[in-house]
Figure (cartoon, rainbow, N blue to C red):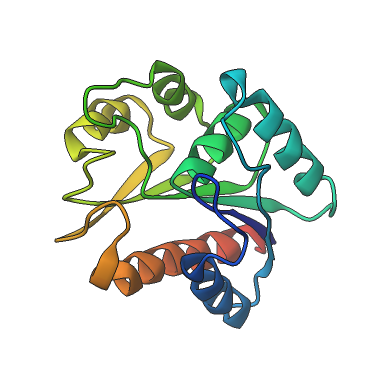
Length: 178
C-alpha cells in the first residue's frame, strides 16, 4: 500500500503535519509520497488539481490511499468519488466555512465508496461537525474521528489527529494484505 499526502491550500509538501504523519506511516510499513499542488487560485471544479493528483497516482501501481489536509482533502475526496482508490483520510475537511456552502464537496463525500476517515476538530470553524452528520448517516463508507478541543489546524491536539489517522490506516493496511 502507498499513501499520497497532499497539503492544505497553497501549502508545501513539507508541511509539518504531513511530515509527522509520513513518519508514523512509514514505521507501519506504508510507503508514502508527499506531493504538492500547483499554488494559486483553485481551478474551476478543482479539475487542474485532480489532474495533478491523477499524475501522482499513476507514478506507482500499488494500492493507493489518499490523505489530504484541508484543501488537499477536498481534492482527494473529489478524485476518489470518480476514481478507484483503496481508502481516503481527510484531515480537517473544510466542508462549510462560515457563510459558505460547498455542495460539490458534499456531493463528493456522499459519492465515496472506498473506506474514508474524516479527522475533524470539534471546534473546526471551517468544517462544523453538524455539517458532516447527514453525510455520515447516508454514506456507510464514511467514518468520523472527532478530536476534542481542536480547531481546523488541530493545534496542540495534532498528535491525537495523527494517531487516529495512522491507526485507522494500519487497520486498513492489514485488511488489504489478507
